[in-house]
Image (cartoon, rainbow, N blue to C red):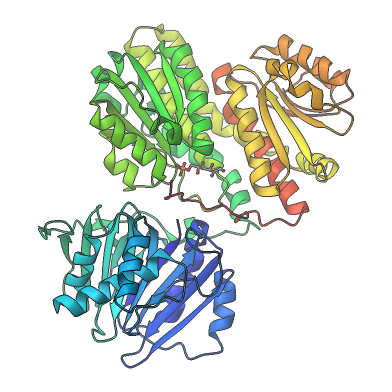
Length: 614
Ligand code: F6R
């Protein structure tokens, strides 16, 4: 995790690096630091806390320089404090580094360097790396770029680094393995960042480094890439970015999370636009069309993901099995990669990831590819590692998701997966033409129905007021809405720090029912389509134990209204599409509770948006 930013050019680097770090804070936010070079002096400032704290602290010293690097941290080695914050100096004070990733063999390297007289101020693996680079420079008599390359060939782990040398005022050396790194190419200036958001207002030309690539970013020169392992020259592919500034700003909302919840009608529509062609009765998706045989003849589909994306995978399991009649297994990527799974070349593996950078999901893909499976990526971030590593894929078109708690990524993932399931169902002959058409036209109504579901915001806020001081909550759902119950509970716990658990409603009687008393709020998804009568019985069981019932129901419901303490209505739709609607009030609920509890909604404690460590 962690975010890195760099600049070299003709402008004052400080505001560019600080603003860039603020945009990357979603990647980690327990400490931050910046180093600027004005040709003579390195000005370095770092602190525990947020980029805003760094900005304040930096006012006390001169922060001049047209070369700068900065870092916002999610601690791995060493507690978050001023000393462990990046950037780190080498022992001579000439080299400075920022690093996103983990150097796994840092202890043995540190020992060897200590034996040669090196001393260390911090507990970090990064300070070890910069001193290794310095040692290589000294012993091999090579320039910075070569020293970085030789040093990186000695380390095991993951990294996106930017390094500069006081003796080389016109260059920054960058390298990548496992963690993302983009270079923004401007006129006589370069930007370096974990994603393109820090430089989007300056340039929309970017080069994304591949794994095991490095570059010397030198003023007045074109970027030259090299393979770290064998020194082969690689040619940079300069991409034109589509992102705009508006998409990464709050646009009048108090928090990114709320903005992103409200963006869902548009995000869902953008995700099916150009793919779902209801009037022609077709779904067009290049990644599926070109590989249709692989899907249709697959023994099974394995879905790997983490967190919210895993919940989208669970919804997909219901859709694929129900509609396309293809067996599906859904796995936590972190478990899958380490349990010696049986994978064959008849399997299709779908990896779901908003960021496209989640280390466990990436590793699961690599494992499946080694065993011959066909890998299909469903990612939001264009050009991300998982998107590049997959054999084929389909992007969700949610736009940048900045709030750490995933919202529009979830509903757009479900949208893409629904399109795939429908397409396969049609291809396999599981659907009549009229049933297929019914699904397509219904899917087209979803953005308007999400819009309507969002109108419950005021009511949800009053419900939030009642339950904001709870210490535990249960979320129940069945069938397609069981994963939504898991997702509702995850949203609440991650941003408001209330303990919450999601369960299949019928499982309640096998244990969790023991928890129910008059203090326990139970959020139940009880839509008309989807085992309604069974869920009503589960609600009766909660009521007889005096639990508080907050039900998500279909418009016009009467039966549950009589039993529940609060009901929140959503529009009616096909059962398989209900997760796209039931999830909306649950997102709003966790948002309001977190705000009422004065929690940091967009940057909850201990979390980061992009989990690039395992
Ligand atoms: C929850 C959340 C996380 C992510 C998980 C996977 O709100 O954001 O649980 O869903 O870390 O991330 P991606 O989808 O980027 O692979």
